[in-house]
Image (spheres, rainbow, N blue to C red):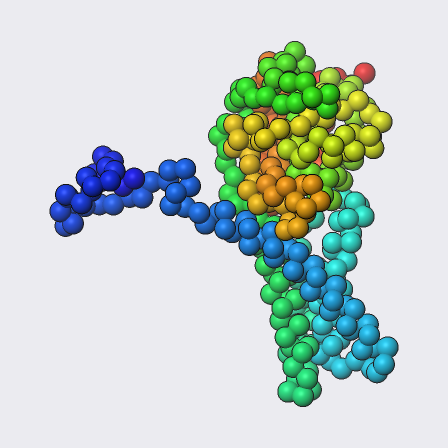
Length: 324
């Protein structure tokens, strides 16, 4: 579809207009012209897997070399680059905290130190491999911090504070249909999480579970929502002994209505482990007993997430909650 002077034309109509008088605006219709986000997300899903393989193989190679002979500056630089990046992912999978700083300044400092060692290696011409690996890790880490982690500018007006929660359908773990209208009558914390494969999501759920009693005292119930398969959600629910409600967003019905679908947001290869390719954008909402949104966290970076204390503060200030 093409817009001309405030009017829109299809098919042959636009060919009849004089070129000198045509002001053209391409209009997005069903993803027909703008496929960039889809392709970008696909590239990200492949990138993260390749980057993890790169840093692991680099560390293994450096360890093998160091076993046989002392390392030169170039290989030390590769080690300095690879180890902090490796540790970041280990740290996340160990579920220490559900968030990091946005720009990971300490990691960037290590990256700069490592690449400096690589670039000043006097033996670079004789053995260019440290230079190749060093640059791949350096730019890969920068891509991870500033590109992969970025979810884009999110300003979903449907989910802004003060808006009424749209009506959508979910499924319980028993396979029964559940309408968002049934949330009315109580205050709820609604967490849309990506899936069991996401370490930060799992840690964040653990943090909420740890503060469940505090939330309950303030009259706030907890609902955890994901489009992942029901079997995966059941596995997750069995880990927690607190009465949080787990829901399945079957076929992305709710996510599509709320504009939370993250196409190709699952790392490449995990679909063969039952996780599919698409997921949701991590989002936390708090609604009052009338179904009105009083808190909305639409993070633009999957590593930057709210602290549980924020939820308690919202309950105290905006829901009139008083701890028993």
